[in-house]
Image (cartoon, rainbow, N blue to C red; front, side, top):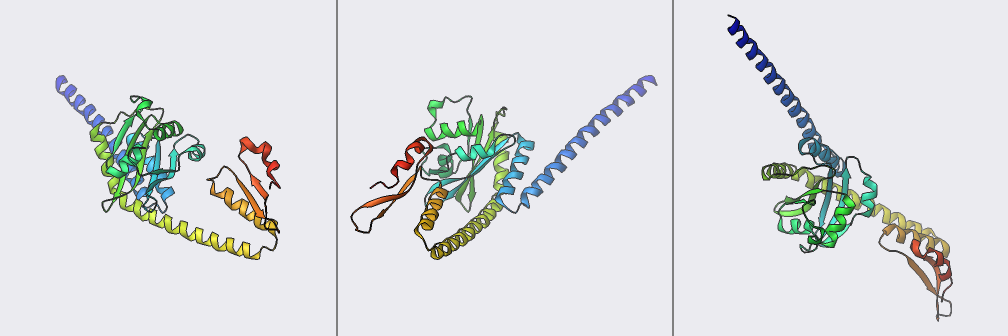
Length: 278
């Protein structure tokens, strides 16, 4: 009888452990379902990728995500954003390369976009000399140790590349896990495409409103100094030039005279010397 009681007690303890395990699994699935629901109902690309990063961290351990979209007109990959769990995202996004050509030889991201095939890189096992200058800089700026690059494909066309990244942790992904991740990204591609279109329409609307406002501001300006200020503001806003010098033809139509100048910080000390330069 004592032996039977011991067996029953052992079976009871085993059942308790199994119940605890099932409970943990159930709670995990419930949380995961809620995260997927938030991803599926995200109304903007920014909120989508915020939720996606949170899910990727909980599910597979990624603690950063980068997103690039293809510009079919320019045939380039354009940076949309880079998010991490605890780094200075603003600083990283300021320094990151904004646009790269769709040339497979200059970047892993371009190769992934063109060939529509994922690429997994563990940079602790790759010598920097094996990487292109663009990729070397990207790795340094994004501070990543591992990167799984996934092409976002809609209707057989690549619309972008998602970088699933890890820093300060080791994932060492196996092929079966990578296949699971690829399947997940494929399932949310339609939603990404929908929000991308929505984002682009909103960008075009804001751009049109800004142009209308700018034309109105210029048409109402009655002095040259005001027009020069508008020119300076708009040139600086482009964030693609290190500096500029604006010269106008004098009344005799013989000489150009500098009336506005802006130089980069390293040449700031001599900036004013160009004013009035002919």
